[in-house]
Amino acid sequence: MSTKVVERKPLSAWERSYIPSFLGGLGVTWNHFKRTAPFLGNKPITMEYPEQKWVVPEGYRGAPYLVKDQEGATKCVSCQLCEFVCPPKAIRITPPGENGQPADRANAEKMPREFEINMLRCIFCGLCQEVCPEEAIFLQKDYSLTGTSREEMVYNKEKLLKLGGTHAGIQKWKHKLEEAEAQESFPVATEPQKHSH
Ligand code: SF4
Ligand code: SF4
View (cartoon, rainbow, N blue to C red):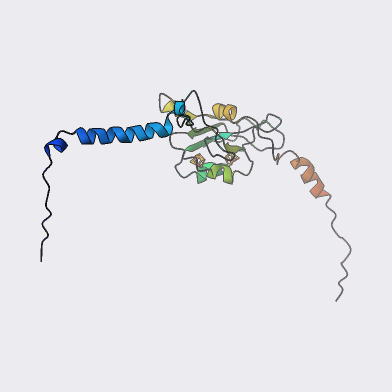
């Protein structure tokens, strides 16, 4: 096997002085400066975060919060679908139990006694929002959640509802009673049907 010996040129005294490398570095800095310095007519490319914040686009998927309906009632019915589907197991729901507090709206069977989301685990994937049959949980625009302890990062029902606010939309249970009554008197054909062949 032939070997190629690469000649390594010794550095000259000028190169060994580091001055050319130093000037080269300054040149790179100067070029960046020319392209970015605001007083040279460039648009600022930095932002004074957190005093200034960027506007996230429509449909941005940030932290998931619980919402209330347009009448101020809790939409969540404690079905626990979101808890089941959540990949990192960030949701923990405590159902009301047999004799627990009833739902705060008519015709709803129940609402959660406690509903917690561990924001340190949540990956903002949106599966909870996708599966919720009540449109009770939505990923909102918050992307910067901070706290000084792990406990503080577990948001409880009260906090989630407060942050989530109101979200008008379906009120599935609102007309449940009328719908059930209407079904009782659903017209059923008593006469034998005539079939045409
Ligand atoms: S957004 Fe994803 S990770 Fe976060 S609570 Fe919902 S399902 Fe879980
Ligand atoms: S947020 Fe939706 S999916 Fe989760 S328990 Fe409540 S109703 Fe069910």
